[in-house]
Every structure is written in C-alpha cells, then in structure tokens.
Image (cartoon, rainbow, N blue to C red; front, top):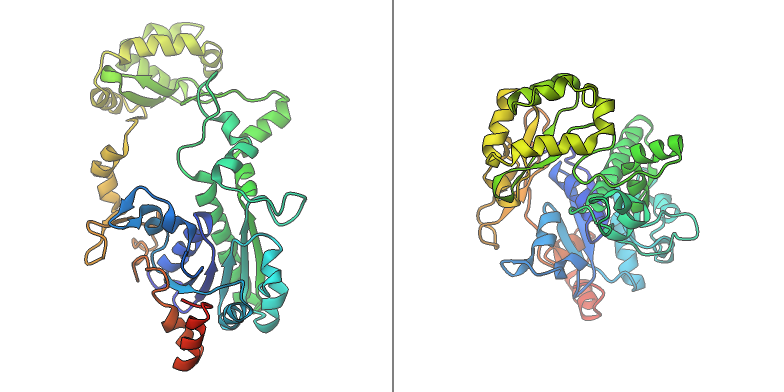
Length: 397
C-alpha cells in the first residue's frame, strides 16, 4: 500500500485544512507531494498556535507529512513560471486559490493543461467556482453555519453549536481525493487529464442529505436532537454515576427488549406507549426518564459492560485521553509513535483504511518552511547562479 501511488508527482498549492489533508493522503499512498508555500510565511496553519508541539504548530504537523516544502512567490511572474514549469511534468495539481486568482497567475486549468494534457487539475474553494459567492472566503465554521449543519447540532433550545471536529474541511479534502482518484482511472483508460472541482459548501450540503430529504418530503424543519435522532428511540446518551455518560443504541424491538431486561424494566416492553419504535418516538421523554432512572445508578464502565452482556450496542462518551488509552484503538494501530524527529514524542493519526492489511507509509515527516526549495529547483536544471539570483530577489526562499 505504501507504494500504491509511487511515481506520481503532486504540485500542492493548498493551505489550512481541506487541501493539505487531501495532499497528505496522496503522500501517504506513495505520491511525491511538492508543497508550494509563501516565502517567509508559509501555510497559515504554521501560525495556528497555541498549542505548540515542540516549537511548531500541532495543526500544521497533523496535516503535512510526506511533503516537500518549496517557497515560491506566486505574485512574482518568475515565481509563476517556476510553478508552471513544475506542472509540465506533474501528474496532479491541487490548489485552494480563490476562484479566478489562479488564472491571473497563469495557473488555470486551460493554461496548465495546454502544456500537460494528462494533468489531473483539482481545486478546492469555499462556496464553489460558480455563482455570485464564488469569490467569498470561507472556513469550516462558516460553512457549518451556511449549509444548515449548525441548525441541527446541539440540544433543543441551546445556542447554535459547531460540530467539534473540522468535519467540513477534512471531508472536502476526502471528496477532492475521490475526484482525483476517479480522474486518474479515467486517465488510465483514455490518457486524458481532467478538471476536478470541490468546495466546502458542497460538502456541507452532502452531510445534510438525510435531513434535506426529510425536510423536502415533510416541509417541516428538523429539530435539534442532541445525542439522539429523530426516528429511533432509545438511541442517545444516558447519564451514569459521577456525571459520566454512555450512548445506548437500541435500534429495534429486539434490542429494546434486551435493554429492558438488563435494567429490570421488563414492564416497559408490554406497555403500549413503548411497544413499537413509533410509539417510543412519540413518548420519547418518558422512555428517557425511565431508562435514565436506572443508568444513573451505574458507573459508566459497569453500565457498558452490562449492555455488552445483553448484546445491546453501547459505549462510553470518551474524552481524548481515554481514547488514546483504549485497547481497541491500540489494536487498530492508527496512533503511531515516530522516532528520530525534531519534535519530541511525536505521534501521528494514520489513514483510516487498510489495503492488504497495510496502512500508509511515512516517507517523510512534516517539512520545515522551504526545506526542499533548492532540491526541487535544481530538478528544473537551474544553476547555482540562477538559484542565488532568485533567492536574492525573494522569489524563492
């Protein structure tokens, strides 16, 4: 798996989260990723701290392994020519420049594909590359708000809440990757390159597929359900001793019956208010109160163990310290220690899939700003004198 994309070269003009996550996966799968950064500043996430890990941003370190950092000024015509030259022999070009600004720098699809017809050209934007909002900037929380995700998140009556992880950013990187891999298959079949376009807003809309479909069918706006969901009860968090919480997901009558037996609530099974899922949805509050009156008498781990005994799906609501100590998490080997890196005790979160029982491969660790500028520019047959001139002119760093 480590070499599945070996031999492919990616020119990466992305920053922040979505694009770097996409290109990091390409690097994990064996592609050579050349990350173009602004001289003297680099990717914005290099400055997203605290927290620092060692002396570097933990956000940048999380999203930029398996890449080479090259500092080029894209506002300088000579810098633009350098990137154009790199794209002539590249397989994939991915950018997150504002729609229109790539063309003004000579880095549009038509411009680059003219000299490299087999190029896979991928773009990531906030609101898409069409429509009146195409030039507006956007970040994960803006799109969670604009796409309706925030209106669905949290408990009824609470203020709007953001999903706690960068779900729109990282998923956009994944959708862009899916587009790139599909375009690579098309190129394998035809020899032709393709233009792949993705956006945060499209991702946000995709995440609300079920809720949008429900609203279009019913014309009723969905409520916030907290840890639960509209169509199934009990299917939510219940309080345990010590203000701990456990999720219990009894998604059918058989599981509900087993849950009632485990908690000595057998009378609920024959109660007409709770006999079917539809009835339980209608009497949601009563179901919650009766079950939680039992769950609060258990320690969270004891409750989860009891549920397991009766084959009722359940788990604790873990904090991240518990996650890192969890036996099943360790069995999956997704959290990996890294030795001999400039950051002490550095660890990575690996790819969440395996091919032939193998995950990705750490070819190189997150680069210092401009660490590979000279190496990559020499591959363009620039002389030492030309390199020195470019550096003195601050075109490269």
